Image (cartoon, rainbow, N blue to C red; front, side, top):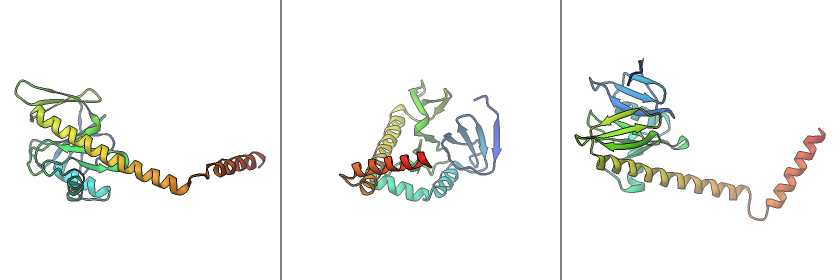
Length: 189
């Protein structure tokens, strides 16, 4: 990566976060954003924990949620922010200092290297070599897709229930009439 790193003290994962890597000293992180490269004075797991808390949970709570929804206990993917569909998955156990966290949304493609690692290509064209087998990467990637599907489905079901509550069957004619009256009133006001 040829971009210059910006130094920041702490960091909250956002819609532009693509990956969180441990720095060489493993006590800080390198964060790939869509258009920036950041050096953060926090370990990757601390960035994950702080971001989960920012969005109303804890890392432990997010892991428990994944376990309850999917039964995954080893290297579980997590939702950081369901409202903005921000999902991350780890490359190894989160307790290992070399663990890298990848945003599911930004992975465009992946391929195997000669030494059994995986090259991840992000949606902006940047590449990152991850020290994990292609099979392990695909397992993590597809687990995260499954988690996204489950949570998205539940959110959509709740939205449908709310719509039905706000506009019970048979009331759509009344709603249309009401909207037409409001438009007429506004037109003459």
